[in-house]
Structure formats: structure tokens, C-alpha cells
Length: 105
Image (cartoon, rainbow, N blue to C red; front, side, top):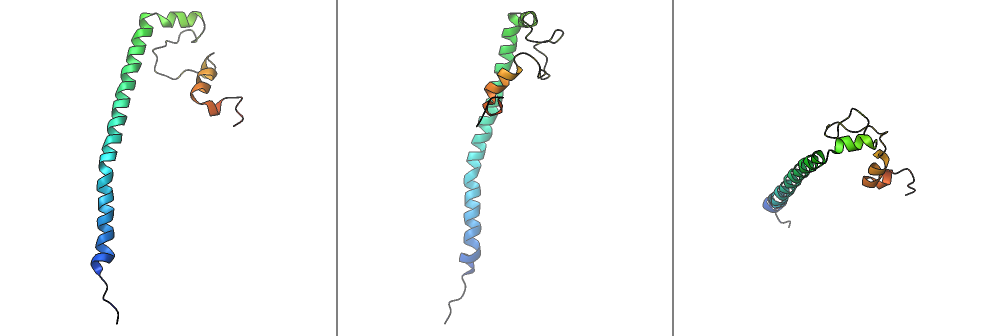
């Protein structure tokens, strides 16, 4: 004699378990969004403070004297620097060491 199928166990329990895991994930998602937003605001604040600091030091004029930036280009310009500036490869390879020219890994 076979036992009748328990539809509650077959269908409702997996759906409730999935809903419980989704609801349990929401606090983690909110925390991640909060950390991202705070990091983004900190980056904006840091960029603005650094821009004002370099402006107070007349870094544009000094960087043109040592040919850090091409003449006619300002350090406050938001466009990305060309790849042939003197510090492009050292700075790029320090942030992305796997892309440096001498990497064998």
C-alpha cells in the first residue's frame, strides 16, 4: 500500500526555503550598496581635495616644466591622459601589475 503524496512537502517547502534565502540575502545586498555608496563618496571627496591641493601648489605649471603633462593640457582636465606621457607605463603597471611589460606570470 502506497502512502499518498504530501503536496505540502513536495512543493511548498522548497518554495518557502527559496523565499527564506532571498529574504536573508536582502540585508547583505543593502550592506553592499551602502559600502559602495560610502566608498564612492569618499573617492569623490578625495579627488576634490587632491585637485584643490595640487591647484594650490600650481602643479599644472610645474608638471609642464618637467614635461609630466604635454603643454596646453591641464591636470584638472577630466579626460584620460594619453598613453605616451612619461608616467603612463609606470603608473599603469603599478595599479595593474599583471599587465606590466616584463611580467612572466
